[in-house]
Image (cartoon, rainbow over all chains, first blue to last red; front, side, top):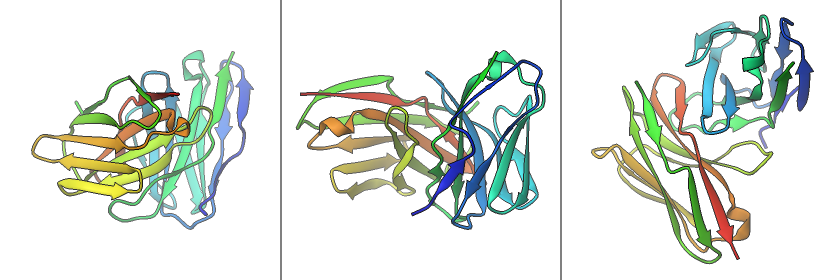
Length: 113
Length: 109
């Protein structure tokens, strides 16, 4: 079974802090994604990566950056956390190819105080 | 802009059949996927349609009409454990996927 592991289930940080969310997958998938999930808005794509050191902006990249130094690891960075970044963050991975499903981690519920 | 529309809530009784619709407006289209998410859990993949028609997987079926920019998920013989949120998702091109806001399904005894 594919395993996507997010480093924290719950995280509380303060406004202005630099926050790192880590995601590791164990199936050698080329593609990795970061989403945030808010009630009534579904999943919104922040960034994705289709290869090591490659990244593309999603629909809501402002205030975020990402790093993919190794194939299995995709990090989301909140450069200076703000209260409007309080949300559920979901990481996903998928193989390259048409119709390939995305496999999601359990999510990190991040609260910015 | 790009958008996917699906009902926010659907309620049905155990043993019944329910259909969750999804209409999309996107710059391109490579396929329509469906995901299920239980409260507190991760979304899990259910189905993928790239071509028009019906795909069946056990109690779940998914339909696509590309000419109508429309698809649906059909759940048969509903069970209490089917109570969850269901998301449609479209790949407009490249590696990006756009998700709908989700439909919360309540199954009553």
